[in-house]
Image 1: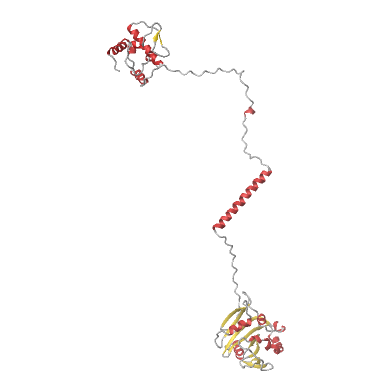
Image 2 (image 1 turned 180 degrees about the horizontal axis):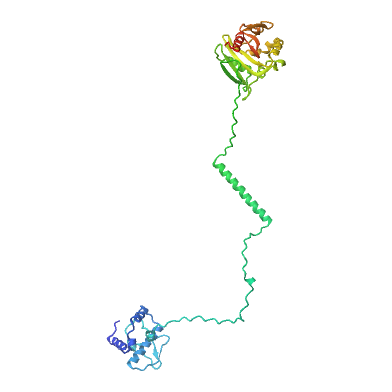
Length: 380
């Protein structure tokens, strides 16, 4: 709706009639007032009161008497003496009501914060008596652990022990699962090599056999007699009774089932040489034994001659000796060394023996015993 010229003129006249202090507020107050005005149109009681104040100013400016105006709870404001409609003062459409005169001229009042009241001093007589010094002392903190009962200590100890055992078992299980447990390796005892005595005569070779097998010594000698051996050579046979020891002379004869008279056993030493001699007609077995008392044994051997051939029946590994061809032992010499022998059906087989110096030589052929005597004398 457009404002009529007459109404606009009336507003301008009212503004001229206002004092200069009210006609044009300062820029700061104007900005504050403008900023305070809302852009929406809401009719409130405050707006009605402001409108009444404007009307009162207009009446003063025109010199009209001021009448008390009351505002009913609802509807336009009317005076007590006369009721005039608001439309009597035609005003153009408003966006928002103007503030009242008091709001325009009122300055911003400083708001003072009341100071807190000062407490009145209390006389010393009315003050409460100070507590004793002992009551104000703060007890020192105690860090001593709580005393547990005997059963509780035992229970805690058992729990700790069970945890340790379980943890150790789990650790052993995990370690055993990761790597196989190898039994401790026992140190290997040093290998003891049996020491074989020096042969009494020179030999061409030495062969060591062992009684650990299931075969008898006679069977082992028969196997050795079947092996190749150059003619005219001596092969020493060393017999092991275990891994570290060789048979003694007495043990050797006993393993061949040779009966030895008690008087002969006392004269045998452990130094001996058992050998196989190879000749054109076959292998012949012989033995040389070192004696303790050669003169005594020489006299005793004449008594032993009665059974000597039968006792040495296993001294023939290559050929069977057969029955004796002579009833008694006969005498023979070689290189001035006396020899006792007995003939057998074969001329290349005999049983002969001789005691030379401190040695007893027993052979199964004339060629064998002659060759041994020559070796002892150093002729070979």
